[in-house]
Image (cartoon, rainbow, N blue to C red; front, top):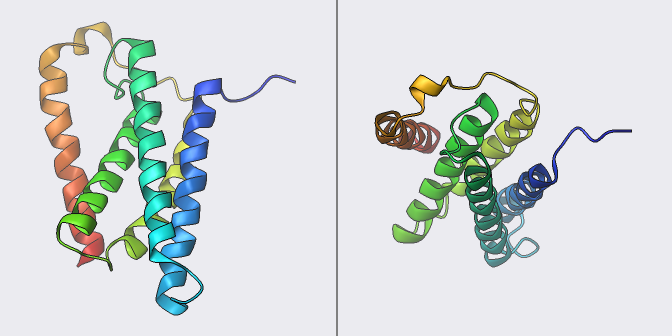
Length: 153
């Protein structure tokens, strides 16, 4: 029986598992702070983000372009920016109440992104220029910022 995923996509699934554990610990720390440690939740989110970034770097090096060429790559890139912004806001501004709301949503969308693995909606060669990436990265960063601010408000 052939596997649906390539070996590199199992790395993304490992990040999803860590995001799921973080979601459980973040929400659990609201209701039962003695049982669910915020420090362990921080380890889950930081390790998940590191694995997610390693996945994106590997994916980018394999394809030779930024990981926004297919719908699956775009969604995983977008989700990584949401997690990165959440982590920055959590540790820079001490917003401990942000990630219990962000991470369950990111986990759900990450699981949904796995269904897009076999999606073949790729960019044409004409669109794989530097200027596309110079515009797309700030756009994705802006979308991620709006998403985090929407969840936080």
